[in-house]
Image (cartoon, rainbow, N blue to C red; front, top):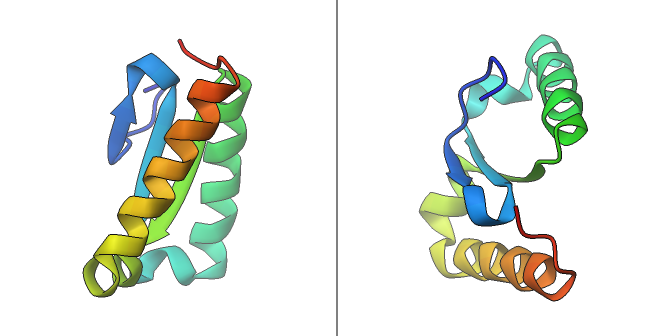
Length: 80
């Protein structure tokens, strides 16, 4: 997508969901992620980042976070 690979994408809401592993904790990768997010946001994408740990160890709260973002986007009329 715009030269980047995303973990999950909901076209209807222009929502990108990223599930980040340990590599995303390095300073270099964090800088790359910020640039990537800037590009995606400039194209109208909404981004939700979750860590692998959040998803694996706290799946119900991860699902709640996704549902909350979806509800907010739908309520604001932010559909693609």
